[in-house]
Length: 304
Ligand SMILES: Nc1ncnc2c1ncn2[C@@H]1O[C@H](COP(=O)(O)OP(=O)(O)OP(=O)(O)O)[C@@H](O)[C@H]1O
Image (cartoon, rainbow, N blue to C red; front, top):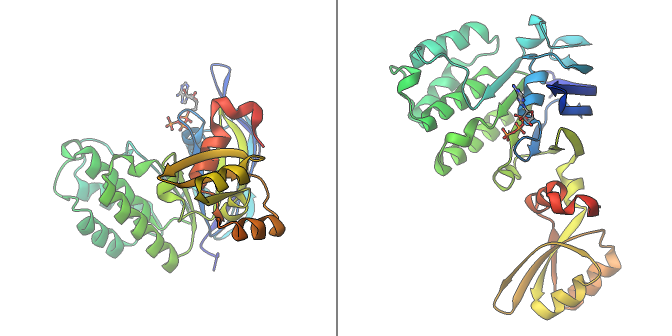
C-alpha cells in the first residue's frame, strides 16, 4: 500500500534568516502513505520547512532524511536528483515562468515528473476550467492556483507537498481540489503534506498533523489522538456551564438556551456517563479550536 510513498525524518533541523530562526531544532517523522497537515500561523515556518523537505534549500543545522519508493537508504534531498525526482512541492506562487503557456508548463512537468499522469492532468484542467492556450501571466490568481493543484496531483509524486497552493482558489474550487485529492490518493496512496492555516477546511482529510509556532514544533500527532485531548459539550446553557466549570474552555457558542463548549482535558468514562445523564451531548474537539489554543499568543503560558 505504501510502496509508492516516501517517509520523512528530520533531526535537529534549523534554518535561520539573518540569525533569526525560521525553523528551530525540529525533530519530525512523517509516516509514508498518509495525508499530513502542516499547520501554523503566518510566519511560523511552514514554507521554510516545505522548501527544506523538497530539497529547495539546505538547512543551517540538522538534517532531513527521505526513504521509500525505491530509496532504500535514507538520503538528504538537497542536490540529490534521485530524491527530488520523487518529491513535488507546489507553492502558491506556482513556480511557473510567467511567459510560459499553460500547455508548455504541462509538457515541462511531464518531462520532469517520472510518475506524471497525463489523463489525470487533462481531467483536472477541465474540472478547474484552466485554459491551456494562455500564458501564465494572463491567468487569474485563482486559475494559477488551480494549475498548481493540477501539477501537484498529476505529478503523483511519492511525496507531494502543497504549500498553501489553493489559497487563491474560491470556495467551490477548493472543495473540488479536496475532493480530487482524496479520490486520487485512494487510487494511488502516497505521502501528502498540506501546509495551511485553513484548518477547518482540511481537518477531515488529515490523518496526522504537525503544528509549528515561531519555527518550533508545538505538537506532532495523529489527528484522532489530538482530538482526544479535549471534548465538545452541548446542552442546556446552565448545565454546560456547571459541567465545564473545572475545565479549560477553548471556545463556546450560545444559541438561545443551548450552549456548545469546547474544553481541554481528558473526560473519563464516569464523567461522560454523568454528562449524558445530565442531558449533555459529548463529542470530539474540533481541530481548529485546538489549533487556535495551541498557537494563540495569549494562551502560550497556559498551554496544556
Ligand atoms: N527569504 C527570507 N528572508 C528572510 N526571512 C525569511 C525568508 N523567508 C522566510 N523568512 C522568515 O522566516 C519565518 C518563517 O517564514 P515562513 O514563510 O516559512 O512561514 P509560513 O508559516 O510559511 O508563513 P505564511 O503562512 O505567512 O506563509 C518568518 O519570520 C519569515 O519572515
